[in-house]
Image (cartoon, rainbow, N blue to C red; front, side, top):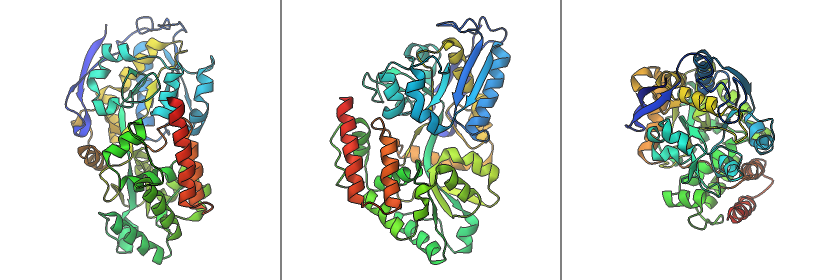
Length: 437
């Protein structure tokens, strides 16, 4: 029989109790070994793209172990690259080659698009029955629910988030001390700090133009002059968005100025996120602006004293719930998929996530004891206290991720002007919104 488990969301995210259905022990039949909806035997096929040493990767490995022990079912796990799933999910899920459960990116252009195409299972009733709807606050549910057009924030549940994430600034304390640089508290102080490193012959900011980091930096610079009304209009189309006006205009122009000033290397135009992360972990660059998903890896691999600070001066920052567990409509083992999601929400699994540099949503705070993890949670709480989660720049429309990558690659290699880039990304945005209807 199922049992109720209780916990609380970590670090003050929410204070409602967590009441989730846990798996009973024993054989696969009661746990959905007959495949539940649609058959499929006692094997659960699972895809995710978290690194083996990342907080999520470590936690999900333990969840797989517990799942197999308690259900008697077998997990066939495949680790996929983020770009691989991002580019091929629609095609794969339209076939019979997809998994039973998958990690997928949240937002209109990704989970929203697949939900509007009928490729994801409607989890609304399951979320109510298993307590997910009660456990997760409204701000986190924004990325779980999509309307008939695939626009997030309302409608049916098509995914379940169980961790948080946000963009922050990682910094090398040893290099800061060596060059007499203090942690900046404003954008002007940030630029002065980067100028000090440039004067010393050091490129201050790790960057990658061939993947997401450049777009995230542009968004942070945009958010420096933005308010909540802009975020709502940009992400959910409640008002027109002018790409040739602030805050987007000043975001692109400041990005361009940072490249010209040497804060960002032109050579980074061809680099990927992995290259950027390794350059920071190796101590080559003093700072990188990127997501909390790097935290566990930096903890494990960096051999110097380091820390984080939130993008200076910003009230709003890129961030949201973490990625979603989604159940493809063609899943052959939906009941087993639901059981696995439940296990990932247990406080003991969430504590593993929290103690390895993740941001759990269903942990007992007393179980998160690692000092570095507490540092990250403190930074995340600063954003939450400001109602500061502003989602991500590529979310609004399908295909926008690639548009932003191309645009800001062009600014890094100086092949286009800010105005030209804004025209390109603005046209793609407007066309995408028109197509959504």
